[in-house]
Amino acid sequence: MPDYRYLLSEREIPKVWYNVIPDLPSPMSPPLHPGTLQPAGPHDLEAIFPYALIEQEVTAAQNIPIPEPVLDILRLWRPTPLHRALRLEKALGTPAKIFFKNEGVSPAGSHKPNTAIAQAYYNKAAGVKRLTTETGAGQWGSSLALACSVFGMECMVYMVKCSFYQKPHRRTMMETWGAKCVPSPSELTQAGRNILAEDPDTPGSLGIAISEAVEDAATRKDTNYSLGSVLNHVLLHQTIIGQEAIAQMKLAGASPDIVIGCCGGGSNFAGIAFPFVPEKAAGKNIRLIGVEPAACPTMTKGIFAYDFGDKSGMTPLLKMDTLGHDFIPPGIHAGGLRYHGMAPLVSLLHREGIVEAVSYPQLKCFEAARTFARAEGLIVAPETSHAICCVVDEALKAKEEGKEKTILFNLSGHGHFDMAAYEKYFAGELLDYEYPQAKIQEALAHLPKAS
Image (tube, rainbow, N blue to C red; front, side):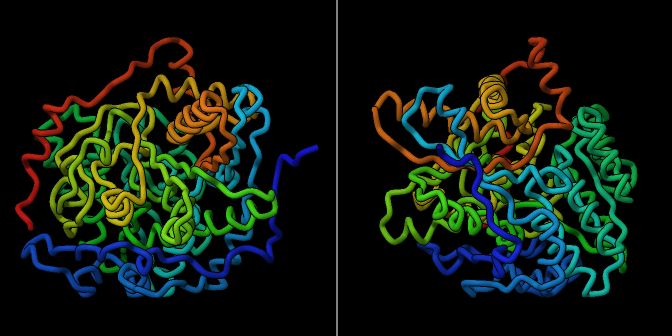
């Protein structure tokens, strides 16, 4: 009888984070100062980040030790279980073996606390008393609220307006952990007031919320800014997922041919996929697939260029796959997958052919999530449904080809606070939306003039 779960003990939690930078096929382009458009140095980031995180952003060290106080908190839920999706395999009639890493078991219900705990720790050690951030679907905001609660810090969250009203219980989670959460754009910042003056009915975007959070942090000495995806140090902290998965796959006597994760800013995908990059670089035939919504096709329809990370142009410019910082995504329910840019590390690997990218419409994703829930019993977040949609396609492809493939995906979060989205899906009220190419070109026309 095959096993359903493969578990590691608390003593086997990884003690280091894996840094993919030394294994990149080509060097990264440096971030640029938003004012001068010249390469930004560490001092340009000191107004909103502690030095330890700035150092992790640029380090070429292969492994970064995880501080013991961080490990002590991570042990509350890590190592997370690796599951064999036997019932899904049977439902699909596929010869493929399907495994998933269940990050939904964290206190906040997603992978996001892996970096939130680390970022709060380093800020606390630097004497910071308050953190600001943005959040889309609320998974990141609730995770930072948890982390700030653990370390006795204040937390201010600017939540994308459409998600603020679509997902009220995420806001309640943040408030339970002591954070303050407001819809973005808000009247609390100049960036928010400017946007509301232009468009009072805007649904908001992560780019707008980032502008508000960065402005808030930059204008208070006791406050730093914290980001839940995109930046190198954030992706670094998530590699604990893939490292555990490698050890657990060995327990299962298996090795993945395909590794899949949904993609918004790139953190959960990097977490599961980056630790497999050395195997791919060594010649192993392994596919690393990032899955994004058709409504926000950053990698599949964007361009690789320097762009601001926020709407107002306050952040350093990053070389990344982007739809343009003016991009305002529709209010689809995959709220965490609505960022205009992709992590520079993921973008570079995508452009070098190490990482693949696909996109799916939301109705097909919800259909895959329903299939998964009825087979495996787990209801996933709308973001995670994109990964499952790709898993189903790859498993059915293996069935058509009569090939035994091994698929690993990251179940990045549960959907217990997303029932309104499922309710609309079952009521036939959700519509597919593919972002028009003309609107993408319009947003890309406003890219900063940087080489």
